[in-house]
Image (cartoon, rainbow, N blue to C red; front, side, top):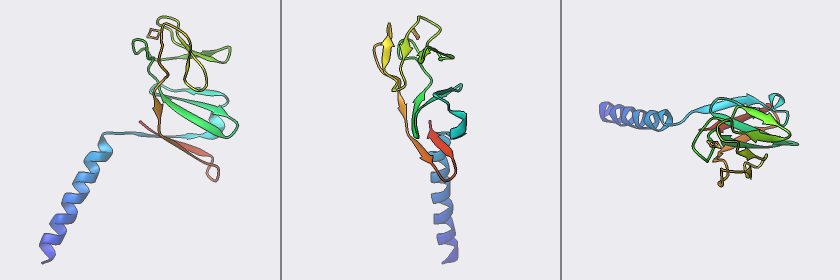
Length: 115
Ligand code: FES
């Protein structure tokens, strides 16, 4: 009787591991986000203690955004710009940046972003 239960638990753990393998979680100190934090795969924007997280992939043709200038995210490839809410402020991109789920804890001062 002990063996089938341990096999069932093992199968459950393997299934959970597969689910976790498909995603990655970034943990960032809120103090590192002034207005924008541009990392390789994600972008975090801040308004007070409200944080938004986005996939760092321009919605025009998928370039990585590397620069913030004049309060806007600038795509280096064809000049699209996005505001803090991820909305296009200048084309050719016409769609907003893709939002990512995120959680901010004021206790720990950290932001968790899942991609
Ligand atoms: S890929 Fe960003 S503007 Fe074209």
